[in-house]
Image (cartoon, rainbow, N blue to C red; front, side, top):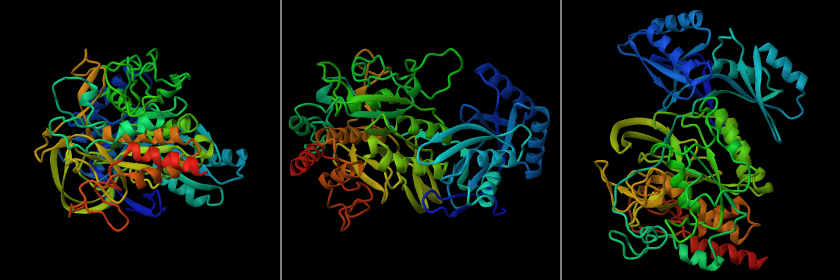
Amino acid sequence: MPDKFYLRDEKTGEKISLEILGERLTILVKERGTRGIERTVSEVKKMIPDAGVKKISSRVYEIEYTNPVSPPKINETIDRIRREMPSVIPYNVYQMKGHLGVIYLTDEIIVTFSSGVTVDVIGSLAEKYKLDKVKVYEDDQMIYVFAQRPGNWENPIELANKIENENEKVVEIAEPNLVNRLAIAATTVARPADNFFRKQWQLETNNQDGVSPSADINAREAWNRLDGGGDPDVVIAVIDFGFDLTHPDLVNKLVNINLDPFDFVDRGDGNPKFPKPGDSDEDHGTACAGIAVAEKNGNGVVGIAYGCSLLPVCCPFQPETTDLLDIFHAIRDKADVISCSYAPEVTTDALSRTKFNMIKRIATSQGRQGQGCVICFAAGNGNLPLNEDVTNYMFFIDGVKNGPITETILNPFASHEDVIAVSASTAKNKKALYSNWGEEVWVCAPSNDMKDDGKIIGPSITTTACVGNMGNSLYTDEFGGTSSAAPLVAGVAALVISANPGLTAIQVKEILKETADKINPDDDTLGKYDRQGHSKWYGFGKVNAGKAVKRALDMLSDE
């Protein structure tokens, strides 16, 4: 593959070569509205009857041939689509060499310009490469999103690399806008309903079946030291895939701003913002929000930071990089803590230096009026490393064993150096079998567990729901995975900030590290703690809310 087809590593900027994956291609549908898209996809199916069509994102569809075809055959199909269907843009599908990741393209290029570049220079560059401006992110850098003009069939990967290489004094970063294939980091199991708070063993163990006495996160001590569940001025943004904002345990926890701009899901003209979830996948955000901030009102469940406020942020299920840039850009000055309970699918690496840099700035300098937002990411549920090479390795997808594989595994979200990567521990204070792991894990938090055959075992997490299995469908005791661990840690971070608002995000991160409990210290596998007190399975240990809040208050009194 020519050197012009490559992406760059998010941290180092080193080139990662790409190769075309045969037997499939993608189409980007430019039509707007559900009916127009469905009509266009139907026409493509007729054009290629020997291939299946699968939706990848709101506007990208994958075409995979039933039988093997040669690269020239795929190129013929691409040329025919270009001739006969002006509202469709076809692309090859790519894979990074040595990585278990699939690259899906769009027709957009994200360009970060050097300081001092004028609008006239930017306009000249756009004309040279036949680009139209789509949007601009303005902060300490000028980040433009361009779309290729109709008839500009140049490969977006090659075009982005050309723009960066040919304009080194003007352009810092140029990269294609890719589709990020995300997976919900949750696992479920049915359990009988009972007194809801007594079922929340992760907050306070109380002789529940199958729960070790020290499996909780010491929530009551934190609440006692704060005389409550946190400050309502401290805002937790939960970025997820669906929320019930009318839920009785959440409706009074919403931050007092117009929430419409924080629904980033395009449902077509005329649909309301934040519609009530219709199935369990769409209900994922409701469950995560409840773990963080569910109201202490005498009914239902209690969030670890029940005194703090909620900013719900509805994310497309398979977002493009620009969707994620939109989301983080919008919430950077609205939230103190950000909780993200999603991870990339095992088969996808969508790298973006622009996204990496934006998360870094929000976590270190731009969020919270310069103090930085605390950003928590679920590690994911494949029993995979966050950033490591594996050889003949078995992993899980939705509880089903897959492999063996010999690949480079990379989770560009949880492995980011400025976020808090959260793995899952169990009610027995052990590693959850499904939980991802690695040097990048910062802390762990309680969740459910899984057998080697994919069956969920032990108690799961009880939280809010819209399509739940208990309490008139308003609650579930079936939630789990690293999806539940991340908002639990985010809630603890919110309590720490409530105790000492002057702390930076870096200081909060260090407090969680220094006060974490070293669970299962005798483990002699990847759970073993090194000289720095870190374990690949548990990070620096299981988060302890009481100790963390005490440390924050002690630092306040020392000032």
